[in-house]
Image 1 (cartoon, rainbow, N blue to C red):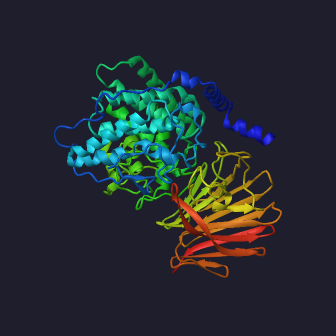
Image 2: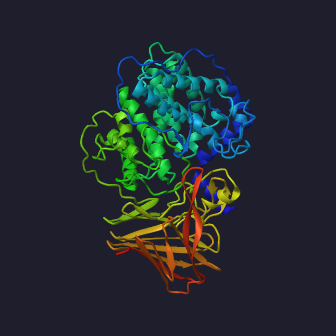
Length: 604
């Protein structure tokens, strides 16, 4: 009971009240009354042909892939209520959104139904149209939007249930209006659709804020962008309401940046992918703010956004764009306007640098520059300059030199954890990821996968007595949050430790040099066993005695107590949402308190 009470206190009394009030309103039919289902008669096209030459000729073609890996055919009609993975269809969609339950629709993971209605596909068709001026692409855009509106009346069904889903859809409509050079003269149908989305987002803003995650940033961003764009239109009605929404959006964005972005730039969800989603949504806000010459945000807001930009830069490989898979990953990605892979974060870093530092981050040319080219910042033509790098010192720490890079999860218990990943590490040698993250796979799937991916067994850390590090209260909530004690005594050494409520104690010491990485795990407080796991890519690893080796690296293991078991077993990694691939896991088990030492070096 005490642990549960402490967990609720950490979530925040104001947040708990906002969530309780939202659920009460849902139960009493409040939203059904203030946001009734509306059928909007078709009043014309959403986008009209562009006259003259394209503003950005010779754009890179964009492949339309859902979750970064699943190709989608846009030449045929889209079944908006069907899962794109298992093809099951929602059958009870003819009700108000507040009557539906995300996890009880008999279609599996609801995100596989939502994804096409996020409208990422707009960018593939828009860029094809900008490159060719062939009307077939514009006609296809209008056809799909008309069809979507007909099948999804405002406030009816699954696609209106989540404020963040409505927000992402609005941001993509607005971004497409900019790309197609129509954001200052919107077609009546598009104006009506944008306003309907704003009417859905604004009433549940307090619920979004109460999540202390990207719901608040996404919905605040959409409210800003939609209101700002509609206020640019001539003879627009509802100016008074739009100005109120714009003021609420500014207040929300300021508040969320101040609270959710730590002083080292880390976002509250402790996830590289959710960090990108947050930064892209607020970068789009800043782009439209600059374009429409609206008042600037506060100095503190820009400082936090600069820190968030530097944090993402610090985790992104300049040569490949890849980041460690840290925290949850649900496949979300805004503004898919480049030919880069989903795992390439450089488009977001480059664009944010131009918007918040008025300079480029990467001086090299590459396909990743197309995002910043299509949504240019003002005064962003300065060459790449030296900016003090981020020092990760809150919920992640980073040790690195010219050869090695090692990230470690050091929870501060400020915001709710999403995985049992205390002291998890992700190890790189230049562009080679040696100890890898497992990812999330799915938020609603078979129980064995639902349990596996967030579990301690899927992390590069230690499990005690086959227990989880923290008890789970619900699908997305743990209790007895872990807080690590982290110390850096030298520039090449880091010490972090925790002791959970069961008395399990783990002290991890990292030492980095040019030739090797040494990881020392001191373990005690368990009853039967402690098991260390290293997740490694499938790359012809061979285990011989206490040595693990492939053609690139040697990993040696030792302990001051008897090693009960040392084995290479099968495991799984999900780099893309709803897609998993086999990997190897090295498991080392001891049955008495002791120290395990892991040393990683290159094959000479």
